[in-house]
Length: 555
Ligand code: GLN
Image 1 (cartoon, protein in one colour):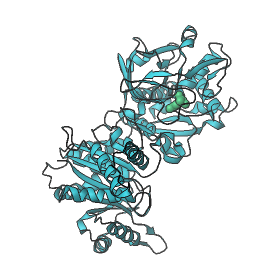
Image 2 (cartoon, rainbow, N blue to C red):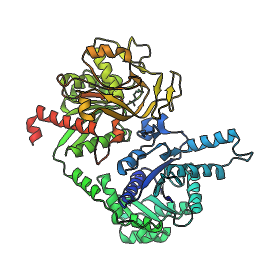
Image 3 (cartoon, protein in one colour):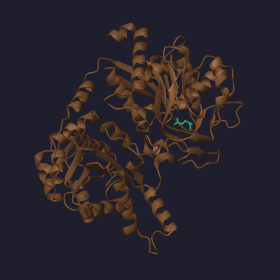
Image 4 (cartoon, rainbow, N blue to C red):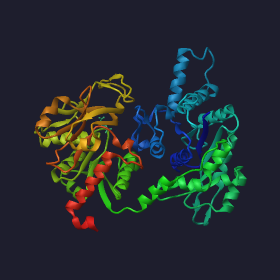
C-alpha cells in the first residue's frame, strides 16, 4: 500500500520546499522505492496557465498537457517517475470539482461544507495523484503543500492531510516541515523562535512533524538543534540542518548524511537497501570542474525573474555539463533592443530567444534573430523564438515587408504566424478554438510527435521522429510555407495530421547553426542525459568560440 510523506513549510516562502521534497524523493528512489511527488497549490486559479510568469515563475507542461507549477519541473529533473495532470492541483480545481458535484446533485441534499466535502475532495485528489489502490500505485508519494503554515488559504489542505494520515492508520504517513532559522548578525546568533512558533501552529492543527528541515545560511550547531527539538517535540535526530549550498545537486547528499531517509523509512516501516547517491556526487563533481565557459544571450521579456525561465536555465546547465563547460547566461531585456544597439550581442557565443506571450518586446526579439542570422552566431528560438525567426526571415529575406503574427497585428498583410482553429491534442482528441475562446486551457498543449526531414540539422539531432511538449496558440501559417521555402528557409519537421510547422532552420551551408522550434524542449531535459537539442546548441556555441577567437578557446 502507498505510504505518504507530507511536506509543509513555515515562517516564509521561497525556502526551497520543492527542492527539498524532490531531494527526499530522489534518495528514496535510490533505495529502490517507486516514488512520486504531488504538489498542492492553495491559490484559486484552476491552473497557473493564466498567470503571468512574473507572478508565479514558469508554467511547467507535462507530457499529458497539464499546465502546472514549476516545482513539477524539479520533480522530473530529480526522479525517474514522469509527472501527469494528477500530480498538481489547486484550491481552484478542488472547488470547481466540488461545485460541479453539487450542481449534479451528488451530495444528495446535504449542506456542502469545507469539512468534510472540500477536505474529502482533497484526499481523493491526493490518492489519484499516487494511483492509490491501482496496479500503478507507487510505494511512496511525497506531497508538497504550497504556501506557509498559518495562511488562511492552506488550512483546508493541512486539515485534509491530517485526516488522511489518521484514516490510513499508524506508520502510513510521515510529516516533514521546512522552516527557517535566521542568523541575526547584530547578535551573532541563530534564532530558533520562528521555528518554535511555526511548529506550534502546526501542532495546533493536529500535525506533529517527524522531521524539521532547518533552512539557514549555515549549519545548525548541536546545542541549537537540541533546543529546537525540546520546543517542537521533534526528536533531535529529526532536526536536520539544511544550509545554503552552491548547487541544488548537493541537497540529496546533505539530507542523506543527516539520516533523513533513514528516519522516514523507519517511521513508514519500509525495509530497503541503503541509499546510493553516486550519480549525485558525479553531478556535483562535473559542475565543480568545468573545462571551459560559453556565454549565451537570452533575449526575453521576463528577465527580472529568473524563475520565469527555470527549465530553460536548467536545460542549458545540463547541456553545459554534457559538454564539460560552464554556461554563463546573460539575460537581455528584449524591450531595450533595437537595430541601433543590437550589435551588443556580438560578444556572445550564441543567442537564444525563449517563449513568450503578447506584443511587448517582440520587435527586439526580431532584431536579435536578424542579428544572429546575418552575423552567423548560433541561434535557438523556442516557441515565440521560432515565430520571430520566421517573421524576420519573411520580412528581410522573402521580401514580405509587413510580415507579422496575428497575435501582434491581427489584420497584418502577411500573417506568416496565425491562429489555428482546429488541432489534435496530446490525448488524440480534436480541439477547436476561435479568437474569442477562453485563455485557460485553449492552447496546443502536451507531447506530440512529428516526422523529421532527412538531411537536416534537426535530423542529425533527433533522428526520424521528434516528440516534444507544446504550449502555444499560434502557428506558422501553412499558406506561406512555399514562399518561405523558395527564399531558403528549411522546414525540417511538420506534424503528420495538420502539417503544422514544428522546426525551421537555415541550411548549414548558409549558417552554422540556426534553428527555431515550435515546442518546448526544455521540459524534457534531465541532469543525467541533458537534452539532444540543447547539447547540440551548446556544442555549436563552443564551436563558435573556436572559430571566432581561437586563443580564447584554447585558454
Ligand atoms: N505567443 C505565442 C503563441 O501563443 C508563443 C507562445 C510561447 O512561446 N509559449 O503561439
